[in-house]
Structures are given as structure tokens and as C-alpha cells.
Image 1 (cartoon, helix red, strand yellow):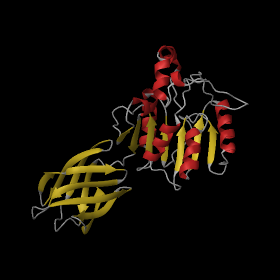
Image 2: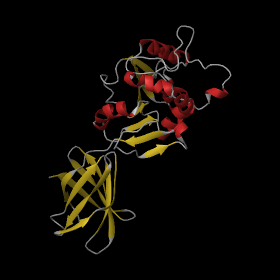
Image 3: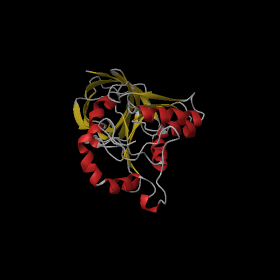
Image 4: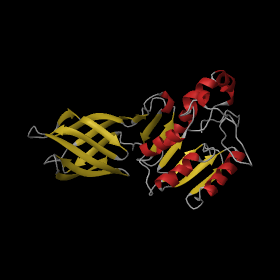
Length: 292
């Protein structure tokens, strides 16, 4: 569900017909009857005003694309922030086998979502919370989905970046500012979404143990979200690390060894230590590293 600030509501209304066309898989101009989203007890209205928001639902196609991009499995716990009528939380459980939780501020939408969960026969796998996404704790999630405007995404960004490295984040339509996505999803603006993997914090100097016969190997890493670079000191000589990549808590980069061969250092971060291997096509020898 899209959530917009109330102080932007009147501007949004002016462009609303255009926006609603962009955000739905099916053009409203081609739909002979108004689409309804509720049941006999409650019928939410497209664009209705709530606490600092208006309501626009995610299309079925975009919901499926978001969950597929996050590679959701039965081992995942999916949190949908601003869950609306429960569509994404239900799809995560029904179509991917995950446990899921929706957080929704509007009490009527929350109750509608609960009824939708019951109708889907998924009360053992899907839970709805009536609450504020900025106050509820979703730190245990392995996947987070959201449909918020950029300013709200930016407000949530510090919380998302503190989540466990490797947590997958998928946002419908809007990005996270200078936190560039790992992938942009969709072929056009009508089905655009953005995918990130929460990166570990690896910036700083790391002493490396087991690197060939060198006793003073170290790497100094600079970091901008998941983008990293730096220099490796080996046998007292510095060189730039090459092809550096950080995905969650998994770090890899290439370097030139003492025999002028290009090797790959492939490591996994745990707390303040890393362990892994120097690689060619297969592991050559194990190495460890500790933050200086």
C-alpha cells in the first residue's frame, strides 16, 4: 500500500488520475466498473486519507514481482510495512510458504486484512498488527516489503540499515535516496520496484592472518552502503583491491599475489571477525581477519 504525507495530499490529488494509472497494472480508463478492495463490512476507497497518508494498493503483478525478487522461501519471515488489506503478507504465505506479518495503522484496514487472512485459510502463517511502522519492531524480518514515498523511505532507511546483514528489502515505486538499489525491477514506471540487501559494516582496517607467508597483511576498506573499495597491504606493499563486492555479510575482492597472479579473497563477516579463503577457481588456503 502506498502511504503519502497529508501535507502533500492536495498536490497529489491534482495528479492523482495520472498516478493511479501508473500504479495499477490495469488502466482505470479500461475498467468498466470501479474496483473494490473490501468486503461487506468495510470498503476502503482508493486515495482515502489516513494518518499522514493516502491509500493506493499494490497491484497483484507488482506484489508477485517484489516477492520473487526477494527470493522468498518457507524459511523466511516477511514483514510488509503499511500492509493495507494484507495483499503482500497473504501472497508471501500463500504463494511462497513464508511466515509473514503486516503492520497497518488504519484500524479498519487492519480488520479487513484479518478477515482476508481468514478467508485465505492462512491464520497459522499470517499475522496483522495494528500499529505504527515507525514504532513497531520488525528487526527479526528476513524480508521487508514497503510502498512509501521517498521521504518516508528516507525516514525508515536508518532502521533498515541496522537490520541483520543479508536482510532483503523491496520497495514499490520509490527508492532510498543515495542508497542505490542492488536491482531495479520492472520494465517501465508502471511496475517499477527496487531491491536491496542490507550490507554489513566493513569499513576500517582489518588485519589478515594466513595470507601467503606475509605477517603484515591488512586491508583498509572504505564503504558507502554496499559499495566498497580500499587498499591491501601485502609484504609491505600497497595495492588497490579490485572488483570489490559486498552482499550482506559476504565480502570478496581480487588482488595480485607475490607471484603476480590474480587471486580472490572471499570472506564472511561475523561480529568483528572475518573468515574465508583465498580463491582461484577453488579455495587455495584459509584466511581470517580481525578489525584493527
